[in-house]
Length: 396
Image 1: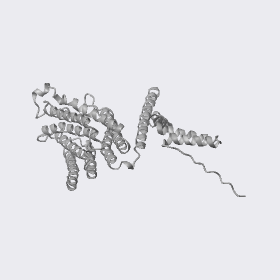
Image 2: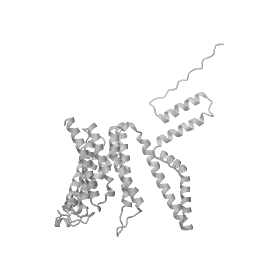
Image 3: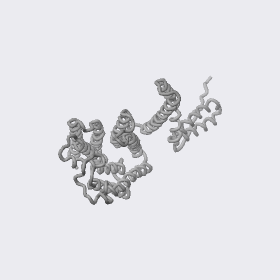
Image 4: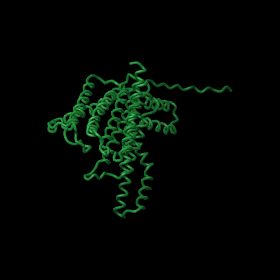
């Protein structure tokens, strides 16, 4: 494929995605009952196409860029179909729009599986892993077909399926049926393939995989939190307050944006940042947030039980948590370094102990041996040699 064709396809993919998203927002503005509060998700969908286009323009032979372009277009198409289906008053053909919205997410999931199997080189580890990936693709196709043929109303929308077939309702294809097993095999296989690729990788590939793994972990955590706070009780009561719901959904959108951005950085500009530092700080502050949140909740609950609700209780709990911030951060950082970054932790301890021994050691030979040992322990060079310059006597 010529460079001009590549450029045209890349620009066309993200332009189409943006146009679809703008149309989706227009539907939301035109029909008051459409949940326009979910429009920020369009930013995340657009990021897939934009980052995919950037990768395609720089690395057209890498399949990851093309997959991201297709993902952005699929997400945007699903968004506009969703908006059309739930519009009020009902628009013509809303049943077919709901059908398309229910089925289009399965090819998107299949493409995400392929990202997991192919990242960062764009190719599979081996033919065996390619077969596992194909199982996921077949499973997604079967699940989409079963969902599209299942009669009755769609799970997320009170709209009758215009393409439903009666006998599918009692078969292994109902609501996706057996296809979900293939999807599960693909998702688990993709995660295992990432681990296998990471264990076999060194240097550049390992750095790239760390970026993608960090973004994937953030997306997984935010998806779980979003699912917890957006779960509806019987009667339509949403768990958590409006602020909690908004924050959890916002974190999910940010982490969804982070996935294509991190992948693009890993493929194109991985040398710009020290990903180990980012991962270390992310783990520390995520753990610190959870611990401080649990401490605040426990203090407020205990104080409210004993003394009743009051602004003094909340203020006191806030001051206590603020005072715990620095010592907890140091303790968590120490634990994380010791548990997950043992080599760095041991090197720092060795250098610190060597600094203390300098105060008491006056024997030159012993000091030289200790210096060689410290260098060998911390830097692990192939060979270590120490030359000492002989003191020159002053001429009288």
